Image (cartoon, rainbow, N blue to C red; front, top):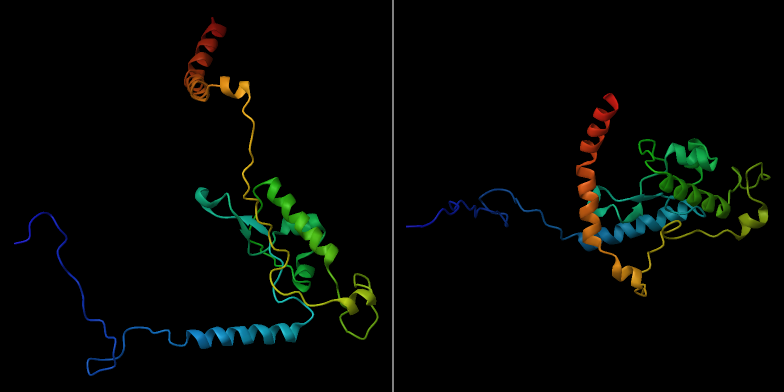
Length: 210
């Protein structure tokens, strides 16, 4: 007899790993993983050759990861906000034609992220080479000069990748002021001041009424 308050055994050992008289195969196999990887690589190469000299990827913004746990990390987002494009002097319609991803749903919550992505757009504009709509026609307003278009090459990989933060440890000299500072006492006093702040305000109001 089984003792203690254990989970009642209810395991299912009826996985169908083989084609048999019991029915169709119920387990999904990935035996074509290597061939799929090769076909994806060939498709990327064919697409890059078809759109050359345009880069295969679009310019993405720098955003913070979601939730408080991962918000310290910076990653590439889906697209730039309409506010960021407006600050950089780029219309959303024009951004789609020059390889800039646009996300009309995302909004800016801080001035720091807005300034960082506007600087990212300005850096991209400075390095951008715009070809005429027709290759043999003369360059119009907004197009790059023929010297730049002839020397342009196709960019492979991520457009303006994010710089990794330095992992070096900064050594700081410990001063006498740091040694004399009492962190726990300071926190405890600040907490106590916050607690009695309302009581002090109430007493001050009573005195003013009298």
